[in-house]
Image (cartoon, rainbow, N blue to C red; front, side):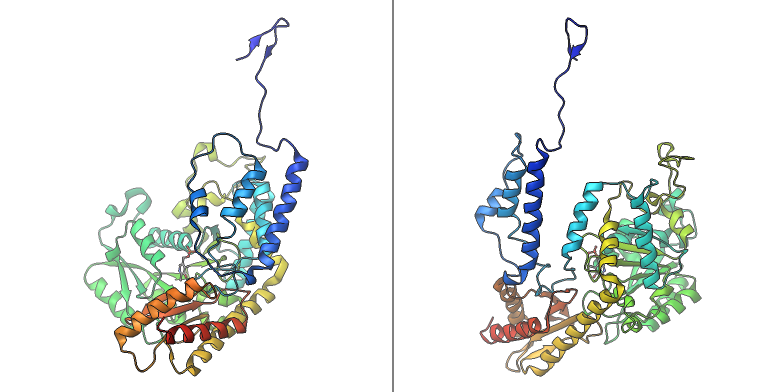
Length: 492
Ligand SMILES: *Cc1c(COP(=O)(O)O)cnc(C)c1O
């Protein structure tokens, strides 16, 4: 409340805003930031893939909450000194750990544009909603889904799997799960995936209230693909025991070895059995954009729901994932819940009959569609498809180098972009081999030259190289092989 002055009008305290006090100054800083970040990416190859943070930088990141303004320039300085030099490393040409995309410079700039527009995407009559719709339409097109299918952009593969499985559960439980909860069912629900299924599927099963026991883990064949005969038998046994099978989760590109289940066979079985088919294609689905590789994921378009990432093999900055659902109606039925304050208007900004918030958990949704839209336009799917093929060719090249090296051993087939190998000279026993490779991986990572991640296949500790990197070159894999041999021989 202000003070009443002689003129009768209150004088109010001055109002503040978070806009810059001096736009010209922020503009200069902004240009510096753009210059810094582009130089940073241009020269990424010259730096270590990863390096541990020095104590001083760690200490700065433990400082208490700032009360007084430090200003943008000082805040940016802190970022430059304590944050920017210590990335995860997945922007580097020799990072092949887990499954992380590289990102692109233009998509990084796109993030800035998205944040500047700062829309709440999907529920309002604006351009960002249409951008997301167009990105989804393109995703459907390249994955072989019909235009009538529905979809949602989400944070990543984990959330995409969660959404797909939530729709599967509600569509095939045989009772109204939303109204009655899982206690409303007379028969325990069961779903199926291979032993190689990603942990995010297990997490989704738990969070959806199905319980880990509901997820039957089916063994794999020597190519790490789901054994479809055992799958069929397990479904029959479950039915005989009074369970209600409702869903099969197939993998297109398993995280361990890049294996793809026989999607045609699994789809045919799911159809015969009346089960929902969900495909986790986090990175593997992206093979579908390449005419040369599409055969590797044949049948992917038969999924009732398909989860995949745009931030792995789509090379977009984290986070961006996508879920496609064949039946728009089932998708909407799983999530749509319209409160009075969210009801679509007949005109104006909320004249959106079918808001995207009715297709997932989030209400406020960011503009992650923009980096996808700009990036797909920048490069076109033909180039992206060539990059995916290039990564597969590099995986084959690396597998060949491993086969040729006397002391290295390939641990699994290489159907796509993942290579698992180990240092295994004849002189070492199995236990020693595991120990040696554990140390070898650590030394490779700490050396800062290359960055693979670990896995264990049939009890054998392996070095795992997952190539979703548009910056890698063949010589980078030569370096990996020579380093693995050098450190392996040194005793790692
Ligand atoms: C990475 C991955 C996921 C999880 O995706 P996020 O984007 O990390 O949430 C799921 N399945 C597979 C096969 C993956 O490789």
